[in-house]
Amino acid sequence: MKDKVIVITGGSSGIGRALAEKFGREGGRILITGRNAAELDTAVTELQQKGITVAGFRADVSQEEDNKKMAEEAIRLYGTIDVLINNAGISMRALFSEVDLDVIKKVMDINFFGVLYATKYCLPYIQQNKGSVVGISSIAGFRGLPGRAGYSASKFALNGFLEVLRTEHLKTGVHVLTACPGFTATNIRKRSLTKSGAQQGESPRAEEKMMTAEECADHIYRAVVKRNNFLILTTQGKLAVWLNKWWPSLADQMVYKVMAKEQNAPIG
Image (cartoon, rainbow, N blue to C red; front, side, top):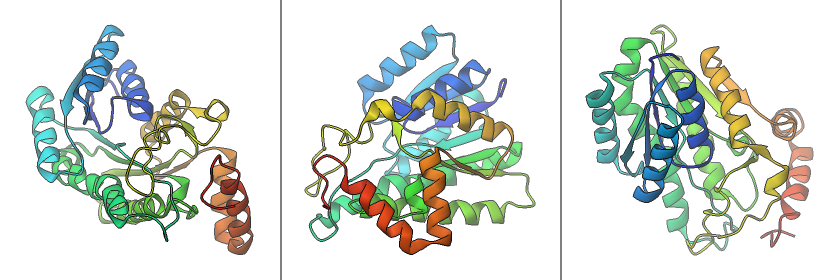
């Protein structure tokens, strides 16, 4: 990745920030985006202090024009784009029968349409360089999770889009990676939306027992370098995908049981 230009959406915290540090340490030139200006500035400053070539651009991935400007900023700063990592995302936690549909729309706008917008405006440069498009998906994109209707739907849609993109570019040299981290210790659950659209505030899961964002970033970096098509992480995640493919009725029961153990779970 030396001297390659990597654009990372949602790069001010969590997996996105860890990816910025990993790719930056390997010699990449980084542009990260985020909606919160203060968090974005802090991330850029801390990464620069580690010797990483990085810039920040305030953007909301759910807004098409912001994505257009993001790509333009990358070209202004670095002259090209080699890798786009569609990392920005949001989750939700509520029964479908109780959730405000605006919550699901917001999740879809960020997790799905945000990827379409970013990819649309970065792809011409990536195609010139035979570079990579990465989608940070989820095990929830292979196996629906109860209480996560909007999140699972957005990741299923994302997986379908990435499959189409990979097939369309089978002969162009563009690499497409669908990366599914599984449960990773980030702030996504704290910012997860409730049935009314408010932020959850606290994680219902034992974050200390999960894979760290840095470990996840290492795996994704290697998958990009190797130009892998899929990356499914954690034993639990691999088992869920395998069971759902070959024994879906058992997967239903096991997933229900696991998700029901969450603190204040919407199912019981």
